[in-house]
Structure formats: C-alpha cells, structure tokens
Length: 288
Image 1 (cartoon, rainbow, N blue to C red):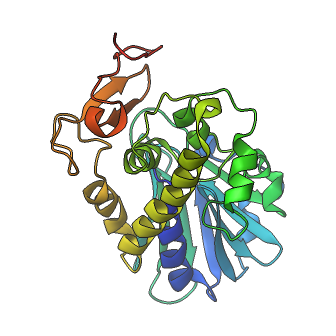
Image 2 (image 1 turned 180 degrees about the horizontal axis):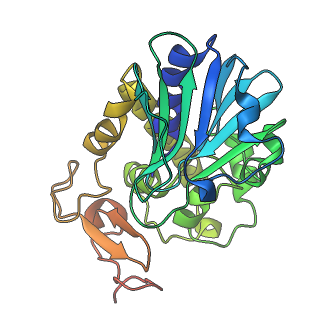
C-alpha cells in the first residue's frame, strides 16, 4: 500500500506534470471507484490544475474550486503517460479505473489503476477536501511542524492499545501504514505489541524522533523519482518489512513474521522483543 513517503513523492511528481495544464477529458472507467457524484467527475473538464497536495495517504489535485481526491488503497497507483492512447478506454476487467487526458497536441495525461481482485481504490470530486470522510478524520501529519514531542505525548495519553495499531490509526497520525510502522518500531527497538500505556518517557521521546527520521529519509530517497519507480524504491529501502527469513541489517538475527487474516507484520526478535519470538496468531502474545 502506498504510504506517506510514496504519496508525498507522487505528489511532487504529479505537481511537476499537471500544474498549469488544462483537463481535456476525464474517463471514469471503473464506476465503483467513484465515491461522489455531485459535482460530476466530468466537471473537471476545461479546468486547469493549479496545485497538487497530500492529506495523509490521500492525493489532492486542485482545479480551481474543485478537488480530485484519491486514496490508492492497497494496490492502486497513478501512471503518467506523455501520450495516452487515442482510443477512449472502455469499462472492463482490467486494472484501469480512471483516465485523465490533458489538453495539448501530445495527448499527455495519467491513468489511475488498481491491481488485484479486491477493489478499494476511492476517487472523489469535491469542493472541499474535508468533504471526504477519510480526510476529515485524519490526525496530524507526522512531517508537519505541529507534530511536536508535546503533541505526540498528548496523542498517546490514555491509550491502552498496542503501539503498532496506534501508529497505523489514521485518526491518530496521518499517513503511516503497515510497512512504515514496522520500520519505525524496528528503528525504535520496540515490540509492535507493547501497550502505549506502558511506554516510558524515554521511549516516547525515542519513538517520536524515529517517526520523523524514518519518514523523512524515505521521502528523500524517493525525491525526484518518476512515478513508475516509487514502488520499487520503497521495497528496496525497507529493512524489516516484507523481509521474513532474511537477516536483520542491525544485529543479524532472522527477521520473523506475525500473520493476520489480511496482513502481516515483520520484526527482529533481538532488536525488538528481547530475543523472544512473537506467537504467530491473531491475538499474538510473547511466547513463554
């Protein structure tokens, strides 16, 4: 799933490509992906994109008073083309969900696609990004100046949930998903199942610092890359997530995994759980 660093880099890439350019045609190929109908998606036609921004994992392409907001979910992506096919796309079983053609003789534009059978891609055309429920409930952005240690400490106050779940909760912190929460907790040398209520002051300070450095470094690695290379860059830059069975780059221990019904997390026992493996079941606890 694209998370904050990839969406941040995709935001910059798209800004360079579309800002100042007029929308010629919009083709809503997969109707199920379109979550709003007033204004219609075709209302973007004839308008000029004037900004591209990000809200957590949401992309926001502004065209005057309208916003094309997208959540790419687990398998969605934006594919830029200097020359789109001349033939309009037809609805079908392929990955194409939305096509936006820009004005000009070259026929440039972008496709919004979603691989796989689970279709969770969401596209909105709204007058205010906060009209999108997922945007309206977002917590603070961890790369913003307002995400101070004091603010983070306040967010954790009274939390009894495990820290892995808190990091992934978009209403607490915007933009961190399964992959980067694994990376953050590994860098912080912290068990994913440690209750937030049990964090010491020193651990809160360390975790806050690591959130910023991990995400910033990921953004910097991807800065300037074309959209087609961002997914590969993310995978190559991860130290523990998706690397079950490989040696930990810090201590050399074998990276372990805990699987759930629809996801999995990876961690290093030596770095994070005192050498004890976590039980691989839904309600995981430290093996005794």
